[in-house]
Image (cartoon, rainbow, N blue to C red):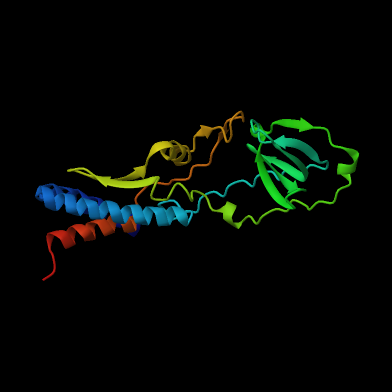
Length: 228
């Protein structure tokens, strides 16, 4: 048996005894201890997810780079928005469609602008004189921010911690729980509406690390044997 396996067996036995100690505490003391455990574990789980590593320390499989959309080589002209009394005439060059948006160089605004595709009131033919109007180019933003996964999943709105009289828990809530489950289990899902379902790499979001398990034992010991 390796030293690592022996250490794990010892930790499991300690946790079994610790569970009995927790249950022997009075109700108020137990709830106080469990709240401290839940708070600390949620914080460390969020930090680990931010570091892009699973509970065993293995880095998450990196996300495949998105296919770069090639900006349209021709201008587009449309009225925007739909339903307005006097919709604005938009002449756009060097544009791409990004999900529900069309993004490109707005000639009138003199810069990059985005419009909702389904809110375009009417598409218009492009006049010959419009084709020769000068316009800027749609430039790509850096990829550093896009590289970090699960930024929203690990914030306080989605990654929750709580307790009952008998347990402490950390997990996801609402729609985030469904998204997290897909990555946690390496399941199939559609990356966008109407797209073909794909299998996502397994990236374990929720799971205790060895240091977290030891930290919970330390909290229990501090609670049972307070200093002074």
